[in-house]
Length: 216
Figure: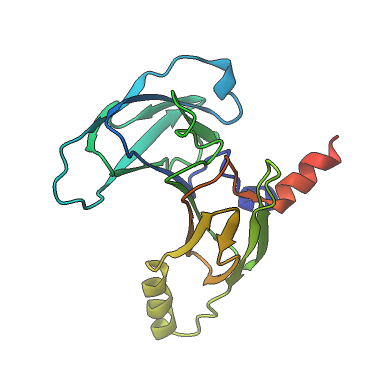
């Protein structure tokens, strides 16, 4: 097993990850999809989220944007998406050969590289183990995800495991804390890190930070 393939980092979205952003005010929000770590190198923001102030029922709707890529070139399936105030947009790319990317918006709150308010990051854990994560920007926020092998021995076990894969686990981040700070899931399940308020954090596998420090 290549450990690098199983390291997760919200600053570099991969096929097993999603970035989600909720839009609480009407307006036009432009953004770009760029290779991870290069957002500061380009000012171009060719794609658009148009937020209308017309919602009456107050219900939040989710809109999915699927990203296609070739090399380091990325394109959303909908270059201009119109939503209502309070709706959530989720970005994902399932192509295995596309390099990790970042969603870079034209406003500070709209940036997968630094999670602030009313946003989220999800990761599907494909291997058992205990995964410690923390904020790479030094806020002190962190936690642990324990992934347990379902130990399927028969078809009934497999059916139960597949049914469980649809159950997401949520970690809420607000007021400088992750709640709960330790969760347990089975292999293949997804954890969604919902950032309610933060100064701008990341959800970063501690192994990545250890590797990075070893190069310094």
